[in-house]
Length: 550
Image (cartoon, rainbow, N blue to C red; front, side, top):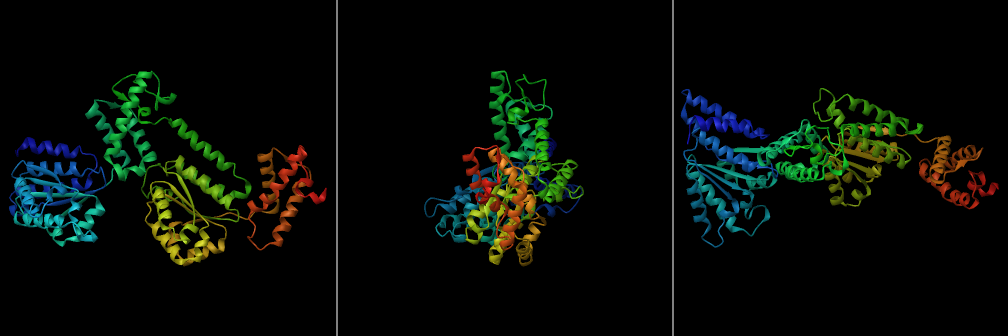
């Protein structure tokens, strides 16, 4: 029944609703019209069609929005009856010829004066878009549109479904857009909104509260660990983490210790309170100190990069400094975070593919440690694209879109197929900023040619990191490090100089770029390691490397 109490109740419910900005904006605009008419404006302003389409991913709140919409319209006098009929659109279809039309009319009649909510409305697409077998769906949709046209101002009909499927339904029948003038897309919830939903769910269902600081920690945890799940689950993700937290809470209190032996995050005096959820109950077993430790560990690894990778070290250290002065989850351009969010988009080119891949992996660790990426590193070769294995690399792109990084080896080989390069560029352009893409190549000239022929690839990876070729002396030093790491062997005096001369002569005899540093070193290391092991010496001698000198 319409009245002040109902009006204030639905207003409070709307204000307390997490997310759903499009619905709130729509009702705010509609409320302005109601207020205008109440002050003497033309009442015909409120006599328009109220039918609406709600779209959104799973768990985005379509049913909640429809129910609140109906209560709001009733409280403001735009619906005459307190009636809300909720059905799956499949229920409109009859199972035998001649049953569908009466069934639809009966459902509309039951909703008269109130609201008819049809979920999964895309199931009414019938024979459109290639589905040729469902004449019942066609009849149900035609009958529904006729009934709505005959009762334009007598009820509100809400169609709901997933965005792409609903778009196909709306394209299939132009009459739908005329009968449903309002279309609202409910966005996916942000991590902070999901944390708020989790807090309210814990309180409403179980009478629990979140300890101080846990809501903020949970938002970071969801952003870091569950971002790829948000479009698939939304609010149900928040409910799921609360239910899992309940199980951990029970285990923690029963065992008298933190789950997994981890210290609470952060430390709380109410750890024994059965009505308080701690961060560890949500599976957040690391502390802020350990987060800082993870970042410090990555920073140490960056500083330990050898001198020959100085350009990579400088780039990564620069990113560390920028990340330290920027909010890890901000997105505004003013503080430069939009640029930082694209820090994982670059091309790495150098003769040693192992070096390039190592730098890319370190970049991925850096971005994860600072919350810029949440997913794993996916490594693939561009040869899959050249071979036409589109399904495989598109799956990799979806993985990267979920907050991970795609490392594409042999990227300069795409120069052989302009079509494959264009397909890749088009797919990369669809990725959100907070995802990583590294194109790895061996030839600067070929990579630059690729960027010239496919400018969209340059736009997708705007930064190029060129790793310099190793000098013969640097190759000798790297060989020495490998011998020390793999065999525990030091080079005897004079061996490093002989290695440098050998590498210089070998490179001079081969076409430029024919032998990578890894190939050069491995070609010597394998036979030398065998001779060194058989000899049982302390140091690797020149004869281990070049038997002819013995």
